[in-house]
Length: 465
Ligand SMILES: Cc1cc2nc3c(=O)[nH]c(=O)nc-3n(C[C@H](O)[C@H](O)[C@H](O)COP(=O)(O)OP(=O)(O)OC[C@H]3O[C@@H](n4cnc5c(N)ncnc54)[C@H](O)[C@@H]3O)c2cc1C
Image (cartoon, rainbow, N blue to C red; front, side):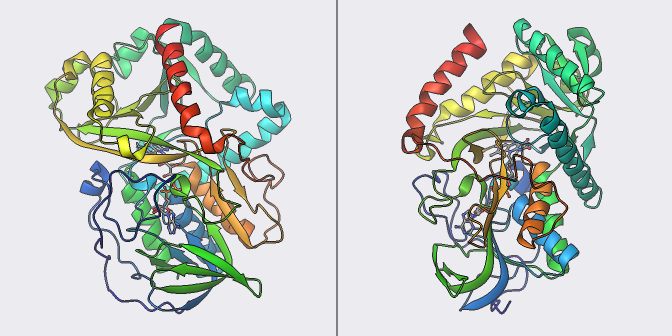
């Protein structure tokens, strides 16, 4: 690739962070600074990048988006195929969800449970899908082991926030054990409190032994350094604003010049803007998720709150809380947020997290919040991701729709994306996450109205009925 580079070292932001950014109405940014996350504050300086696109250029493969997915794809292309991909990023490197999440690496993909896979596709396909997700989880763990990212193994706790949810957890644990062969266990409230956490809402829990909490930005910076060391280039402040086809290639328009690409892959997650290509429009329901991190808790405060483990936790609400004790003694908690970017700063969304933390851990009711931020999660209309070439006649590919379960699965998604771009046989391409494009939705233009109604229904179902 012949893109001219203009800087050595990481590119500083060329515009401030826009907290109101909304993928359904905003254009991709240009060189925006990071969201003010705990991860950004503690990851160390971003790695060297290749500067914004300046002038016209040529590339075999362009990857749009520099989160976990785009970086995993670039890494695979370089390492396994000797292809030096060009990664175009609208903002700073790793600006999207990858620098904003909870760092909970689960053996999962999409929003459906394994019992729902069986209902949707039957037990044989569900077992094959499980083998693929498990393979992906092992691959991700092999990457985690290569980079210093504060890894916290120990599994995933799924806490029942009401008594009536225990039946669901028992049934899911049985499916995990009997159909898929996992060592999934049910814990009583006392076992949970004695060994892990004194969550005052929890009446019991399911423990999945697979699960690793990570510092997501340190991990992503690891992917980025390795991908660049193997020949990939990463150009921040280079949003793809549109394109046209010419002689089978894509001419990708960025503010600094046009990049001609023989193949292009979108790894833009919940930040996929409308109007770039009909194959991408309305495939995703971008959903805002909020996160906050407290100040460091003393050993005595942790003891009083009943925090004994760094194993990460989600609860059984549909609009779930996810939380964990970070390795440096802070507490992190996240959950749903505003429907629209314009409402993201409304204090009631942070209040929801504070109240959630206080209900679970009354001793932490007034603890100071040190960091608070939000980001757009890529939820697909059928709750499962796709790694797809939506039109076989066009060399355009994408991987997204992880529905808030992308920290670990994005590694496999990026690897499969790269293999798909290179036309590799041998992967299980007939699985439901690979063999169809993401479905659209006839009501997609009205999705925010539907989302508002759903949130009210979920609240009633989670808290009242
Ligand atoms: C608050 C929060 C908490 C979460 N917690 C968890 C968790 O604990 N566990 C879990 O598994 N998942 C979690 N997730 C989801 C997880 O972070 C994502 O699934 C994952 O990071 C997706 O990575 P990605 O590379 O696909 O997309 P992203 O990291 O979002 O990257 C997409 C990139 O594309 C760029 N882009 C968009 N359009 C263009 C364009 N036109 N041109 C150039 N670049 C463009 C964006 O600037 C962005 O940097 C959470 C998400 C949020 C927001």
